[in-house]
Image (cartoon, rainbow, N blue to C red; front, side):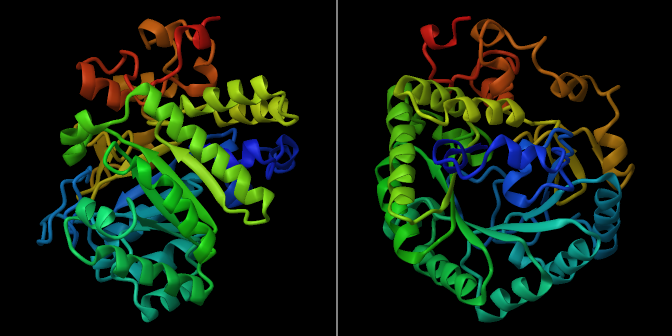
Length: 393
């Protein structure tokens, strides 16, 4: 993820990171992406079941019971292992995690073991009691997925009224003192909603918003033709940068990030250099700390059935199962060929990626998207929108 507000608006400086020696467990949450040790943030799909039918769902979830999900005791063993391993964050995801009966107990258990517990939810099931339990359990953050306002969101979600219910959940979190933010996936059908999302963030006092580039996984594979072309992507990223700067200039300072297209980092750096931005050098230092894509290294996924994946989108590749071996053993076992290569992708990427001067900043971008589009996981990511002149050494 690329911290637009951190880099362009100067809300973070390199010295802020170095003060904590860049260790993931020592860094505050807003600096975690710059950790030097890259201990993995772990996404746990606590359940596959979901009450919505999102068109871009990577887990192809439906509103029905699925068998084989980790039990409460198995989930606690997973949490114990992650805590002992030094994973800085456990992200409860789904499906819809609020459909899991023991969710709050497991959040409390994770916090008690010293993990930062956060949740990714569609927001429609957050009532006053849930918001209060989030607060009391010590949940660090609630990320609510919205892909536009009103009917635009509801068409993505497949259920009428989903937007209003999610917005009510966001407001309940704010009222309860729980940090909450938005998660927005950009496609051609909703790119025009970016400005309206910024207006919503401003008007509702929402402290964080993440703009996700489309990943071709699960039902999202069917949207491949609806992904932005390179010119459209550049315009959207410029809009995100401009609106972030405007809000910060007017003392509305949300944290703004882009996610899942690491070309955003070099693109932002090039723009700042072209503008003579006073923070251009500091931004470059932070981007080098960030190191771009972290699939199989700084982020991992445990599925509802215990399967371990390089990230939450890479579901067709299983590295092991926590029912058989602890996550910590699976994650550090470089006898698994793919995992070993993902620890350092630089010798393996091909084409323009291999010759790119931004490789250390971008990290080779999203391998699972390259594989989905070309059949070759080491081919250039087709969503990279940098020109040949911009990547030339």
